[in-house]
Amino acid sequence: MNRILKYVIVDIVKNKIVLAYAIILALFSWSTFSLEDNASKGLLTLLNIILLTVPLVAILFSTIYIYKSSEFIELLVSHPIKRSKIWWSLFAGLASSLAIAFIVGAGIPILIYVDFLKAFMMLSVGILITIIFVAIAFLSSILCRDKAKGIGVSILLWLYFALLFDGVVLFLMFQFSDYPIEKIMVGITALSPIDLSRILILLQLDVSAMMGYTGAIFKDFFGTSIGLVISFTLLILWIVVPFSISLIKFKRKDL
Amino acid sequence: MIEAKNICKRFGKLEVLKNINLQFNKGECIALIGPNGCGKTTLIKSILGMVLPNSGEIFFNQKSIKKDINYRKHIGYMPQIGKYPENMTIGQIISMVKGIRNNATLLDESLYQQFEIDKILQKRMSTLSGGTTQKVSAVLAFLFNPDVLILDEPTAGLDPLASEILKEKIIAEKAKGKLVLITSHLLSELDDLVSQVMFMQEGNIVFHKTVETLKKEAGVDKISKAIIQVLKLPKV
Image 1 (cartoon, each protein chain N blue to C red):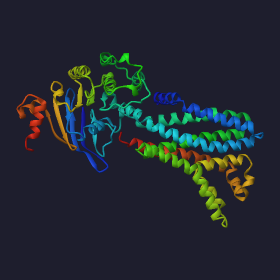
Image 2 (image 1 turned 135 degrees about the horizontal axis):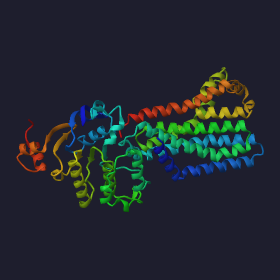
Image 3 (image 1 turned 60 degrees about the vertical axis):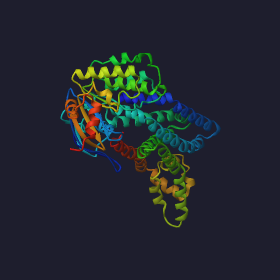
């Protein structure tokens, strides 16, 4: 495992895109915090940028990288290496390098400007979101043999999670505003890792008061330690489920 | 050494391998021939575990290959079209495969030297011609002194000199008692190499005979002529 993982990481580092990604994240973060006088407000602005860009970079870069690695995979499978090892190494390589880029780029300024608990929350959410979208990229690239289709699916999934899902939620809330749907809304947020993360951070920032009654229900659920444990479990499930499906598919794939 | 029982493989509706049964033993040199798309490469990839058959089982030294991937330590594979990570150099590819195989046995670097690979170690795979890529594939296949050599169109794209070096290497390895499996369309090349011929058509094995019986049956002294003769004969 270590050897293949090493080659994957060296290859990603040589690619320099991850480096540029870390620099851009750093630019975003440092400028946000120096523009806003209030660290909480800065974090709020940064949260919106991060929840838009991190999933996009993670899913697109990973999908393209997996397709690019098809030759690497083909070279390895005829040698005595388990297929699951190859797949795991690719996953670990991509997830760790993108996560490290996030920590270096956005993590350092967050840790400096924001108090520790909020910073810790923001960092863990950012890392989880990175790994989740790497896992989703693995799923979409194993499901589509065709490269253009696979990358297309990844872009559509990002559009859905980052933009469309919010629209659907808003639509539901307006349509059913006469009914007591607040508790159902809590359940629906579990369907999108991005929304789940957003709520987790917003509640840390005490701006939930501005979200009215729904905000109060969210606070009731996500504010408790059980709610916190459940939401982190859900986020981890968003990693485990797509990656496991892709792993099973990869083991049965003809190369 | 290698045994396949009732191998069937479908790609969608297309049946590529239809109930293949075969047995290859140590010291044999088998030519796998047949028209394009008859399932030769699929059969080879099934033996290597790159393609997973829909039914049937393959055994390597009496052990099913499904459970244990370590049998691949004993196989050197030279693909028809070698695909390598484009941004790696030849040197990096070779050292990576060495690292992965990580075996203690003495490396066989004769092809490495004869092809003068050390002069082009710094070249990136994306800049290589088809023939040079084939040379790299050949070096990797023979490097670890494997008991079984599986060569898919080994001489296609190689210049005459390199092709002759490779042929001599194959003969030398065969003399050491290794199992060699070759697919080729150049029948004339096979004459001094192979001891058995397996002919495939549309996913079936049409025949699997030793070269002597084949020549005797056809009454000619060249494999290429013999095969054409046998195919012309009405189906027995």
